[in-house]
Image 1 (cartoon, rainbow, N blue to C red):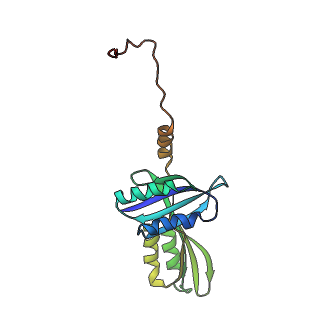
Image 2: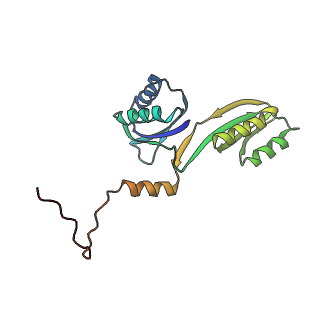
Length: 187
């Protein structure tokens, strides 16, 4: 099963190597690994996409949380989240095929970011499936070069509210109108 894991890590040398090494030591192939800055310059967010069964991945998630530079780990499986990948694609379409390529790119809400005599560069951000579909449609025109960022992910707004509520300690409510509680037997 495909899992998208996000880890908030402290910005220090060697963190990426530690995390990647931990996955490699357990025999996991990382499909995608992206590291980027966050709103706090002391932290970075790592987004890792792996294909593994739930039980094994739970052990890896726990091991990841034990690493010293890791602040927080989240597996997005079973939660509401948004993921995006970005691709830059150089398509070798000459002037005679440009309009067809532009039409395909517009259908996918992509952008043409560069045009030359022998081709153009397309930018597209979306899910992995949408990017794969776009690549498949552009392949007959001749893809000369392709670069992808990898998956980044965040919880949806409704999911964030649920998690914040779950993180708050539950306080007991005392009611003046409540009847007497059940008495405990004498000890």
